[in-house]
Image (cartoon, rainbow, N blue to C red; front, side):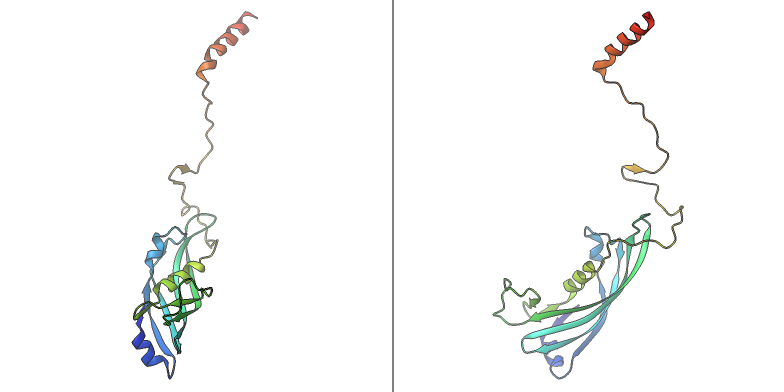
Length: 175
């Protein structure tokens, strides 16, 4: 979701600049997080220009698929996030400023997509639970693991002690 500064300056002085649209954030699936599937999210908001400061107030709505904390089955998690981001077009505002809440705009385009993704990642819950825990849906095996009855494995005897074992058996026979 990109806006040109000309578009914002033309519309946002007299009244808030309104925007809405769908944004593809499927890139979040490839990151190292719990999101298994997420597609397009709907973003609706407004933009206010005050001198060199731009205030974006927007809502993000969508659905992500997360793993159940108990059974690892897919759980649909609908979300709605209210977010407010501040930007500046001032050439005197540096990246190393103390105030990290204000993002500098480089060039003539303000790209809101990274901030949408950031807000979604901040809202991913630690745990979700599936409402219906049908045993047929629960995975019974995976990479390097399997659920089933515990099989008793005979402990292998150390080859160095094999000779000692034969001596013990021979000693028991003599008694």
